[in-house]
Length: 199
Ligand SMILES: C[S@@+](CC[C@H](N)C(=O)[O-])C[C@H]1O[C@@H](n2cnc3c(N)ncnc32)[C@H](O)[C@@H]1O
Image: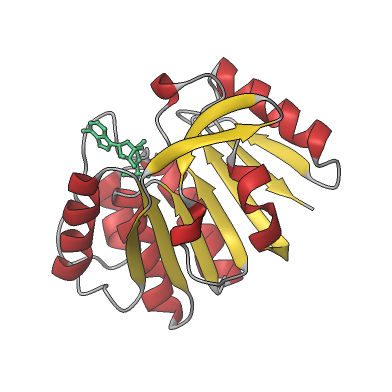
């Protein structure tokens, strides 16, 4: 069974991971993305959201001696707290929390609140982890990730979508596959459900 303690042991953390009940990604999702990262050694990792996952992925880059994490975070207070955690875990060389406030964007006539992607540096993304913005904000809250970041994805970019057991995420993945048919999606039945998209 995946637990935060197992992750701490596997990744050699010397102190407890900062975990916020109900908000941090579940340990089995974190294990999945960290295993992927250690095996595939992505150079550029982008997260939609920040938190425990940013610490875990930055630690993987440190262990790999390769790669960097850019976490887009809308909440100023979470930017400050996750950046402080990176500092406490001596991981600031491996990850950055980017303040990317939500703004209104129009996609095919529908308005979404989404991260300001112009805040990202010029990069090609090898691993994209989508765990925000929160689902309560709007229907298909995480749908804009693919249309808005599409041009920044490297040819072999792999996308992980958390909370995919929810109907909303199931629907938005159907939309992604319809709009971007070069992607295939695999569903992982873990605590909160996860989709892995590859092309
Ligand atoms: C599901 S959380 C992201 C979790 C992150 N991937 C992790 O593993 O910790 C999505 C977003 O919710 C917001 N958030 C985090 N903690 C929160 C809290 N306690 N109350 C309200 N919003 C929160 C932050 O903006 C965060 O980026």
